[in-house]
Image (cartoon, rainbow over all chains, first blue to last red; front, side, top):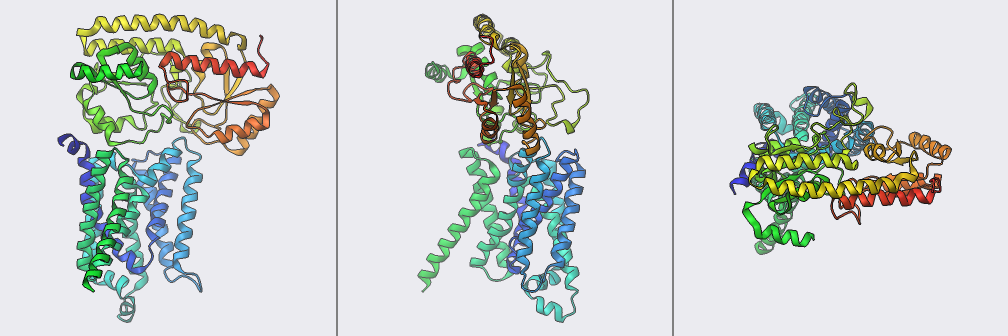
Length: 275
Length: 302
């Protein structure tokens, strides 16, 4: 067991510290019904990483982070401008297009790079198992800052997602808060994609939020439920990865999927008994 | 044979040297040298691309428990081995320790770049890392492994030396036979998917210098394939080498347009059916497959 702990220690620390903010942001995303915005932004961030690699930077260089962050900012701006969509064009469609084009763009860029295949796989499933301690701590520091901004402006952000009508009637500058939301969201995603990959980011954002919506109604209880599920599934996924010798990121994604299934079943049973 | 050695390994238990090899070619030679004094585990699957191996927790566990690591030492495993070693934190396997056998150390590698420039494809600053397809290099690797085992486990040094001598005697005999087998095809040109075969080509006088990849590690593009097809037709090149992890469809398309035949080869024992029996068996398989294929093209000086 000691050996297991020493090997899985940093992945475990990453899974305990980092998903907290993803779960919280996921609740916003699910409420706004822009589920695929994270996939799109994560893929845009990955596109920036791919370009940096093609320019000869290593995936751990600061230039790579800069490229990735710059791409994410542009993505955030595009998403802000298209928040209301066009006539007859839902924003979800535009989000889907951003995702697909960014994914195809990554593919094109990496076809010119000798490490292309490996990088493509890494942007998808990440390298949770080999995460570096410094990377976890830096990412956590960033998440604390983002979390702090969200706590300070909790009233505005809450209105933005949960009660936009009231926000508008109170004269809130919606586009500004939207942009700020996407920028912070992008920063979180950019840094987590490099550890966990696109699949894990999407799972941590959406699955706990959906589970929480099944059971809880108030934002506070939803956050608590989401955190509990993310933590349990993270530990379960790491354990399965170690015991059954599976790639770690994909194991956590599947564990989150199982968590949703169990939550759904429990809810079905409970509501049947309740009737 | 394998079954017997597996049974022996479970009987002998603790006292045996715990050896990890990155790829099956080094693993096979480590088994030859170590005999029943070592237990060898190989990390990469033989049919896997040894440039890219998906890290799994068990790899770190195995490295953490190992007494000896046998790796290529020519950056073939650079994408995945260093972070696994970081995770395993095994002082016995630290660079420079006798337990860390970097096989290519002291070996003259081919295609050493003048400048490390990514634009030329896969960056192997130390030279082409696929050196084990030259059996003379395998002899050197056997010696490196023998020295490594002896340094870590001096009490069995006589055994290791005995196994080394036995292996190299068989190898030397085989090298003569292989050279004879490929002699009729000296100077012939062969196409390969990836630049994995310069050592084999140099040893046996073949020309394996046309690749389906435009640059090392970069997937084939339509324009480049058209060039390859034209070159193959002009020179009547009749054989394309493909490895298990490479795209067979592309090779088959090129073969259909040129009338060439596709030969499935592997650098690693067990990578294709018929090559499972260790290093000598692998080389037997490589040499006879190539001799067969080249014989059928009718260009040989029979």
